Length: 107
Image 1 (tube, rainbow, N blue to C red):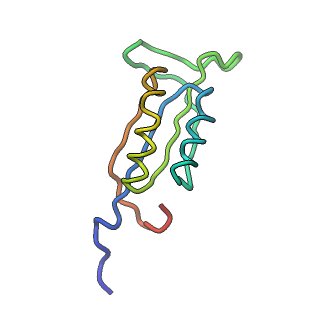
Image 2: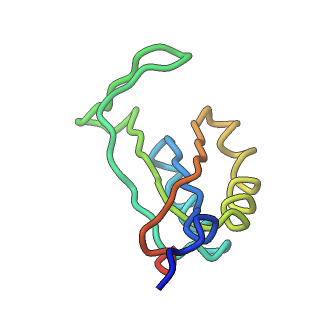
């Protein structure tokens, strides 16, 4: 049995650091673009162009999350193209990177 073609194993990982109230909007866009799996992770603190921030556990006023998914290039491009204007307006961070997956049928 031959090794799989590396191109067939390549997928795009999309990571979005966003304000919690935008999560529903991002999840709905993911569904529209046929993304079948994603994870939303809580964040505690960070630092960026606007300075340091910390999640306020009491009020959730500055609550941010990390949305992450892995999909093929076409879905990643369509998904991020739709979301880019919204994320830019809210100062969110969107990252895309090539990843090699072990079980490409899952993505």
